[in-house]
Amino acid sequence: MSKRINYFQTIHKAIRRLLFLLSIDLGAVDMSDLDEVKVLYERFEHLKAYLESHAHHEENHIHALIKAKLPELYAVTEREHQEQEGELDKLAKSFKDLLAINNSEQRIAAGYTLYLQFNQFVSSYCTHLWAEEGQIMPGLWQTCTDEELLKHFLSLMASFTQEEYFDSLDKFWPAINKQEKTAMVALPSGLKT
Ligand SMILES: [Fe+2]
Image (cartoon, rainbow, N blue to C red; front, top):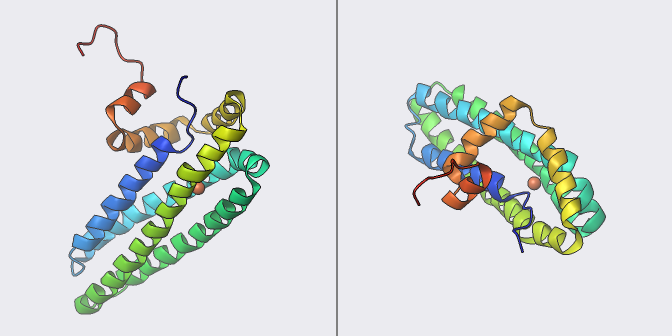
């Protein structure tokens, strides 16, 4: 049997990569250097916008199917999306507060607090990703036909602008393996294996 549609596999790998890279860099950044902190803040804002866009794509194109087929899991995932929005707004405020601190010693101390806050978010966000991959997707495979899965996948893909799609490809590529890359592109014929 050919592989069934998985709504989450590629995008969630890309999201985990971005979350972990920012977590690592927040741990290593010299908080006394305001310019370096600003660079991480800009990366956070870009990631925040990407996570919000990803959540809206799921809500607009996948959640109706989850609600119809897996109502209990739907209620949980819908609530978690709302909580994530609040957590991301709180993180943005913490970043802005950090940038407003002029005293280096105080910024270093507040920077560690932000580091912990961000990693708490990463932890709960990754639990959410797992629930979608490890509970919702298998539940949809059990309850949906391939045609139903494809219909919602095509609706999702049709909602992307070209710019959004290319931006996503940039994020997917370093996060996925050779087999997943091969599935995404038509390789030229005659390549040596
Ligand atoms: Fe989600």
